[in-house]
Image (cartoon, rainbow, N blue to C red; front, top):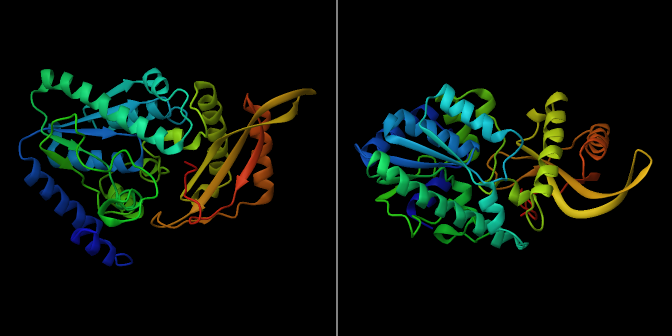
Length: 335
């Protein structure tokens, strides 16, 4: 464990001063970057979103953001990201549709860590290709920006921590991309602290309080091989669950809630006919720093309502199970 990590862990539980953090981090970014450019990988999640706006405040037009749609985004997520960051913030955002490329690389792969590494590795290749193209347009881009947060480092086994799972944005500079350094403005923040910084930066409430979304996206919630069919079913089921949570006012009780494609099929009945569809899992957790997490006790009537709606309205799904396992022994994500 590095000295910086020891100091960070020692501050857990203390009052976090977001205003001071922003001021200090902007100064640190400007000192590190100077008049050079930064290429930031945006995943569409809270961490990289806050990172993007923080960098924008610090270096303005020197920032170039790349958003890669790997085919594992939530319903309408890509459209929302482009609307908010290109529209509201005026960030130089380059959006790439790479669904076929990513699903092609992951074809036939079922092992969770291998899927993560394939997606992470393909991210690096996409950025390598993009960086070459951007050099022709903007000249040299010296720094790579990333939305790494402290729990990512802890779960990835960096700094002497015991590895739990791989994170595509942890581990230093990609070997096949030449940058002078990494810029990671939220590296030593926990999730609740990232949100506080985001609010002070002027990011809309809906974006700041947006549920955490891993870099590999729905890939870590889709058990077994990644296929467009399974991902499309998962997208629809996930939308139903999240929408019903919002309507019922239960979204304020959970820090994260989502659907899972279990890759298990079961017999069901729809419109009087036999079906053989996928089993969808639903999960809602409560946590402050995402190192540990408890289960949100959703009303049983609500759970049965969601189950019936998913099973009857989402084509390809016909059964729902409720995951009530805390972290540990489980992780928040299924893969």
